[in-house]
Image (cartoon, rainbow, N blue to C red; front, side, top):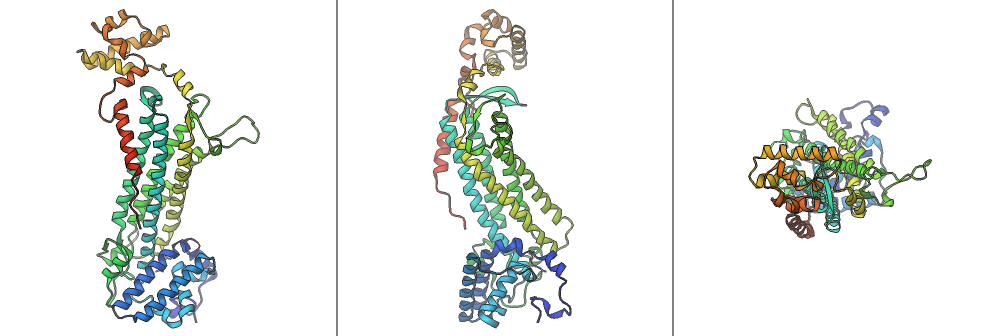
Length: 465
Ligand code: ARG
């Protein structure tokens, strides 16, 4: 008899090359726990509607648990002629309980089965990633609190722009990763619709109860259209997009710190445990962790692209192409989870080189915009104030000095009546203190944000199944 679950209509065995080409168990074995959970819910429902007796469902459920224990313990023998994890578990069930095992697949297809398993897996992955991202936010918050009195040059175009509090800088990343977490929660809402019961593509003539399975598996609703379900991988695209954006955030941060750790910048002291040396140049300390984080982003974006191209032009319902979704999903998740896991301790252990930063802080006219706003405050139209300060900066550049070094006469000339009030605004510390707007780097604003984030990140995360 054919080993295949679908062998009935075939005369000849599958070509060995095709078995190797088409197997997915090498990858989808990761879904075994989800496959068992979903199968147990399915069996219990079959008993509720009379397609199994309660005792039969109980026997199946107990055997499925035992198979799970076997797999946990590495006792499952994988065989590519059985294609995928679903067939392996069904075969193991038949081995354990005999012909009764041949009833589990009643009113079910691997098409709705696989997508139910994947949804359960992604749901867990979202929970895990949310916890990791929260740890990363906490690491940025710890750094923000530790370095809060440090003033950093803020950059646009990587040119010195305006001063910012270091706490404000770190909290900017807390915000980015907060959006990532919210996007994941949103993705989870849309994916949490039960596929099982759609069967192959058209549903079933058997009296199943999808609502019961929905409740057992913790889905929010039941998929309305069976034909849509078996081809729907939208949630995977969304999830891998979420992962891609997180990876992009990580890559920007990593790039920034690669630059900041150069001798030229020298803003950071990276922890030794997160750097490596050179086999030939004894003095080197390289920011490999940051570089790899930057580099791995390419893989994640590649996975997103893989999924989009996989789905493009695919006709409705199940097509075997869809099996190719797993490599993208697993690789993107593993990559991002790995990056976030090392980023959190790296952020927490990296300290600012305060003396170096302070020694060059007065370079680059970080106080120029504050000076311009002072001119505006005393009545000068903004465009005229901009031009006047631009001319003062040019004057400084010509004589190699800073705005604070200019004589009162220079300010009077640029903006009559300004000399009297200008001194308390010049210099970087004064410039920072002058900010007032909501969301700015104003010290009181930043303090408020630090307190809000501390309270928020200390909340226990709601458990996600
Ligand atoms: N292993 C397949 C997948 O991952 C599921 C099996 C459905 N196969 C089929 N021929 N209907 O997509």
